[in-house]
Length: 231
Image (tube, rainbow, N blue to C red):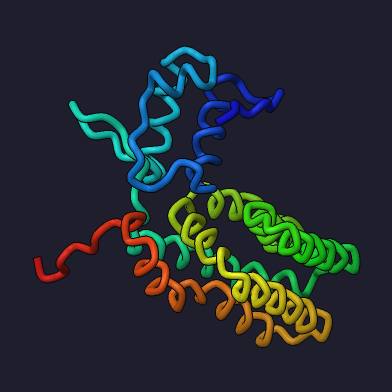
């Protein structure tokens, strides 16, 4: 684990973004114990910014701070995954309706570039890069319609959803399907088919539900046990 080196960030922000990136990328696995002492030594910082970063991450639901026991990376909560996906789908569906009416050729070129970079990520077996360009693809809709705050909310409130998305990308068939759906989105946008775009985006964002069962069976230790709904 290496400290992010963003000139615009202070030490506390760098520690926070470093830990968050490692949690989202599953370098720090769900259920893994975190030691303030070990993290501060690895990142060569004092314990105070580490402690502050963990408090911020707890508010996002990415770590659990347990009094007298310590801190662990939170397990993936499927209830929270569903809520985070609902947030994203609600905001993105409305944003893309605006995008279809105002998009420019330069926006389409950026979308196509993201797809080409995703294809390269598949060749390189680089899942994090693929996920980055997936986010870049979807961010175009928000940036072009001046809905940057909405995109920032999605990014800051999607830690559980992002982790399960990354796990789903370990299947190359799913990777290829994402690229196909992105190409379909561009085709519908260029044809001015608003309903077609909305339908594909809904399918694209909800596909995680189909993949959940298989992921739970393969990696049960990564997931929070479901509470008995009758209790």
